[in-house]
Length: 227
Image 1: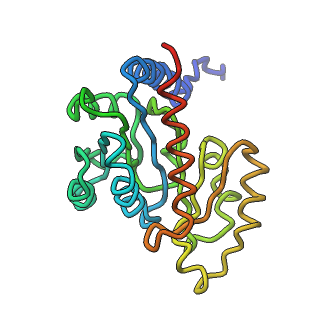
Image 2: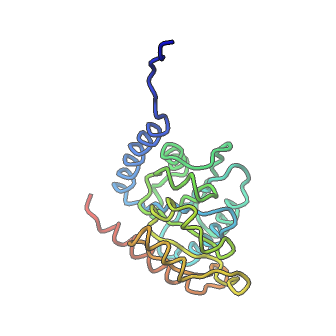
Image 3: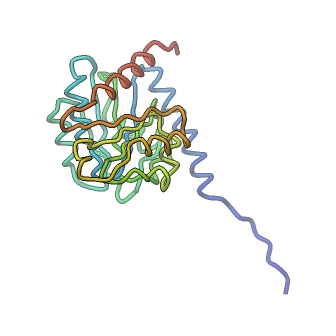
């Protein structure tokens, strides 16, 4: 019996390659408009929305802030962000586990950027899919909460390889959980030597200024770059 000859197509590789091209177009567009976008990624319950609200309250007098809240369903997070004073749009992904560049572009078109300096994309809650898809952001920020455990960089390495800044969130509950901050930092350093790691609490404000200082420095550096 003769072997059947057929072509094997790596569909996922093609999808990611096409997405990367769209992401670069979007990134160049936002750079031309001097709009700084942050892709915020974390597991469900890590504290993304609480962190966004505190960030908005801290920087609202300095920057015009917009937020795209991506979720499978619900508008609870969007309502919280809106009440903090940011311009917001809710993005329902219809079951998709991540945002991609085209979905982000369409969200930006609906949100409108003419009156914005910063856009936060609160990505779908998980540590796997969002790490694979570039959305055209200037910076990728990841969050890992204390209740999740300090070994997550070992289990989900890609997220920690691609992020530009890592927040260890919910520092206020550390006494209840066995979370080794220094061990977590070592795991991240082995994957991504350039990534700052900051443990903080968005609820109490402990060490929150370290996140704000990093973010502000990155925004100001971005604004000074000539297109």
